[in-house]
Length: 196
Image (cartoon, rainbow, N blue to C red; front, side, top):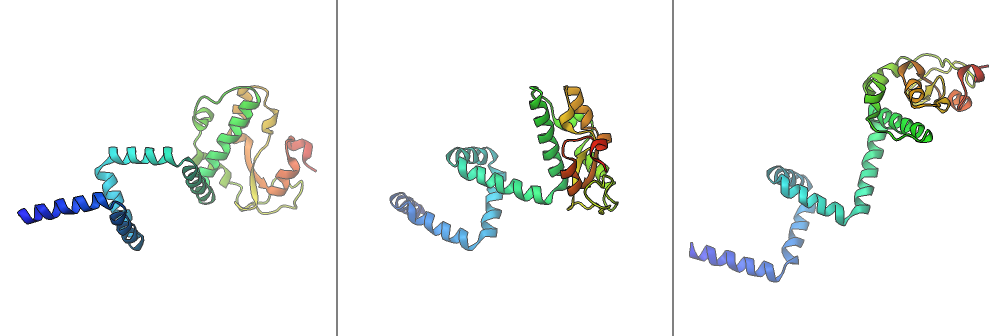
């Protein structure tokens, strides 16, 4: 028992005198065992949530550029794979831009303000998938898919003069899917102005 205590104290003194050697050994082990490292890290975070939060905040404060890059990559990946999340982001941005143009701040959650959820918007827009493009101003009845279509405001959002107009123009009844070509041709005009 006494020898074990002496051994531990000697190890402690040695580690204090040579701080990089044990760290380097752990780094090599961690690099060779990424799954175990991730699992151990998750277990430690679960057992020590306050310490984990402090550690994360310190890292974020010390590495703002790395944090931004990690967040950009994660957002880009999610944007490419999660359609409902993409609809949420695009709709929120469009509403924020329209309100900013009117000099009004966005003070409440977009979908709470509009009165429907991103899931309801997704279901509404799925009605056009597999059908010919309704606009047909630049195409000849192209079949709508997720890849070749855009969300379109039947009455353009740029026609909003008040906050209530912005809300009205972003209701489901004013939203549809049309092919990208027709949407680019239509631009900011009313449907009747640009239809052939």
